[in-house]
Length: 368
Image (cartoon, rainbow, N blue to C red; front, side, top):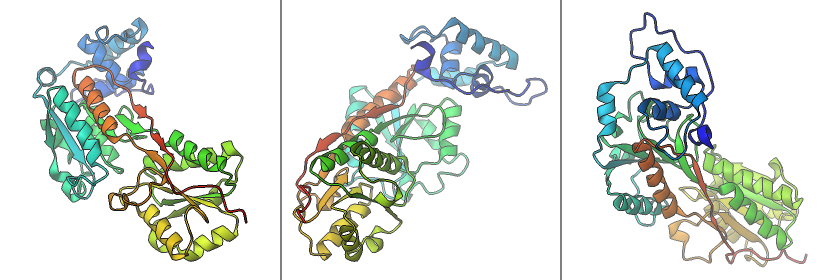
């Protein structure tokens, strides 16, 4: 594994050190050497042989040559701060209200975070700027207060990439709970919605369904795009019609997924509907309401599935076919990754599998 364990950065040309006013940063050394900032940190701190994943001599030479070329000198104050530990982990959520309700979908994440933090001897610091939905979090320096902790976990479908990038570039330990595509170098832990989505479609296809429709919100968050990707891959694997015609994407499912549209889809041959899970549960609520208003019996006349778990207020209804997200496990894994970063060790983005749920809302398609 070697260098791959700590990732790579795209090589580039760093500014010449002559005449510069500010101290060169590790991010510039990483850019010039063509490696990740984590690799630079390990080499310059002398920890590159202490992690169990030694870095090659060629990579070490590139890092050292780049640091000398730029005139990089470690900041003594920063090194003292990095060596010290307050045993505090920050938690920042970008939801509209910090999820203290046990029925909130984020609550199980926090249970896993708290339990693993306690096992590792950390206290938690909750940054309540999230109580306003992270208002102003995209402004420059808005997340600087999280530096009071040794490192910070971030939760939310929409986190400001520029602010996270600034923390990562500065070498502050950050882990995002949920898959992210940016910024480069950000460590995250997420659920494998792609594989789980394929499994749900495979189950419906195995029951005999030949036209399946996905109902989702109009949102480009990775959690939503991953679910759609898994759904479409499942259709292709089963040899079923896919593409845009198999997806209903709506900014307002409550008003766009109606009993009339359900009837039109059924007349066009659709026999099963799949909805995505989000914080609001809007797609699943709209789908259930439209099916009920159309007077359809589930699963006798139409089959339903959910890519996730139903909202807490609908948990007493028959469990839908779908999958369960291991939220406590994800929370605990996020703490383990953050703890490794704080200790100066390498950490990699991690996907955790979901558990298939047979449910009671799906069955063979009607005979006619």
